[in-house]
Image (cartoon, rainbow, N blue to C red; front, side, top):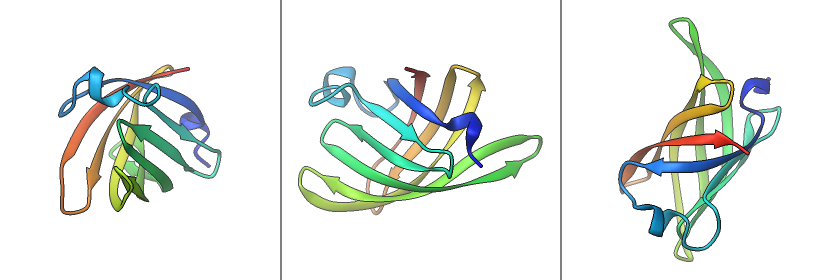
Length: 108
């Protein structure tokens, strides 16, 4: 169960991309359901998440793989999410054989 992560989260900051890019099409977001699956979009990258909760020391992390598109080309990758507090999460998204970026998001 991914209850702590469940919901819609708006991406507020990305290490590799500016706000102009990551919000260019829609408000950048990550959405997670109770099973740890979901979707995201930033810029022209859209993905469907397949996640699972893992324990790292004393903290739960949602690790995931994803598939989708980047500017209409097939894309895939991996990433993780962890809670900073009840309304803020941080994570990392990686494009397979491509860029990666840390990001932070706030609960919608």
